Length: 260
Image 1 (cartoon, helix red, strand yellow):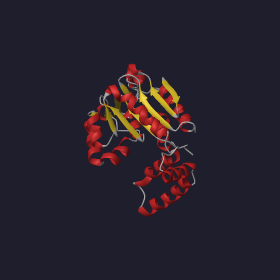
Image 2 (tube, helix red, strand yellow):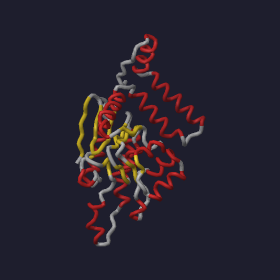
Image 3 (cartoon, rainbow, N blue to C red):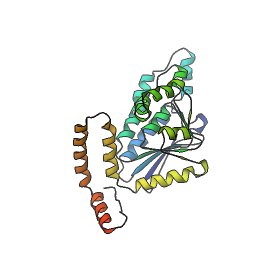
Image 4 (cartoon, one colour):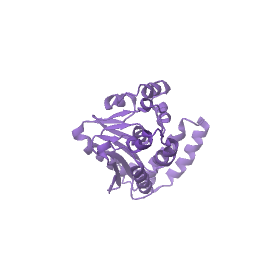
């Protein structure tokens, strides 16, 4: 099941099937997508956090839930599962008009690791790890894994990560740029909650426009990117937060962002 809480502008979506390392079955996948779309569209929510219960963040698809068909030699329609369950969630995270954080409390495996990479910010417990074990069951990386990895670490390292299929401990993930911060387990929750609150108290429209610019920056020519920046800056300049930011700067005080 999925646990959803909203507090002070921060929506926390917690994968909660700890007995199977928060693997996604049909129910949890549907709950996660529906809940994420709801909070992403709620103007009162200014930051979304994805995290997990127990020892894992999310271990990807629940192959155990598909075991009956496999036992008869009938593999699942994995293409349908991706189209209906994972790809919409990845797209929703990227398109969300607000910061999305992955609070990696434990292992993020397979599509679970891809979900983490789709987020804007990744804070990891020192006990967390990332792993893409697809080749161990004769599959290819999915849910955008290679799209994210090639942009973050390059094609050569991306190949090594998915072909070796070895876990990447949090400190190594930090060195590779796969996570932004690693925190000792005893401080982990207080740290990610404080960071989520900081983001929720920030200039939400500027964050959203920056996300949109980043999403295609590596694909466009410089002239195309410059034009997109013109359009985005015009929108940002028309926000109440921009006026507040300038007034605060001129008055030498801290801005009070409204997210509008």
